[in-house]
Length: 265
Ligand SMILES: [Fe+2]
Ligand SMILES: [Fe+2]
Image 1 (cartoon, rainbow, N blue to C red):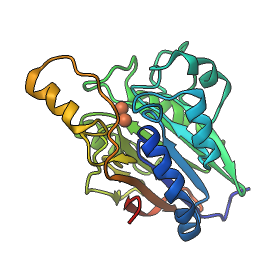
Image 2 (cartoon, rainbow, N blue to C red; image 1 turned 90 degrees about the vertical axis):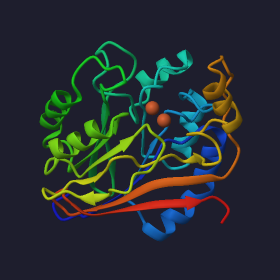
Image 3 (cartoon, protein in one colour; image 1 turned 90 degrees about the horizontal axis):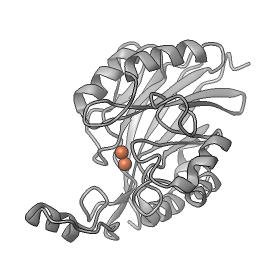
């Protein structure tokens, strides 16, 4: 089947609001031409108005060419998407959420004879999850053995320590373990010794002119006054943050490259 096929994967960090979706739409075609990825996976937990995802915004990301969408702590922000999470296998929410809750935590997507397992996990430091992401990924990797040629883990977590630990935990067992959630790209992308591409945080695809996506004057007012402030998505200085991972036919990573690109430059 996929015995001699190398794999190239583009993973796009948290797409934030309409400005993030427009940035993805503007830059993805060029990235496809230049890098020819076999798979494009997009974190969409902030795709709708900056928080959560809706049926419409999920469809938009899929129509733009996402092979799969991962989520995070904002997965259930919009009730209207719950049915869609159950119906659309290409969207995954954290696997270590309650078993009976809407959606699923992993999917296998296929392209050109390659099978990519995509797993979404939530950290437990400062975030809610009902099971340890470490035990969860062990169970899922066992389940995916023989069903996927390579596995991508999106570790959606706040604490850098928890993400680094997850990288080591899956090293040699996953093609890539990429962190999301903080919206700030970290400078530590590397291939771990066992052959897993790792980065603590991919960053976001959205407005760098705000505060992790929010209009900066609103975020500042909240910090300065501690009062309730309505948050809106910033419209300043959109960037696309992503990583490009190349793997061999055994699902081991050969390289990871960060792509930090302004929209419109
Ligand atoms: Fe996010
Ligand atoms: Fe998040």
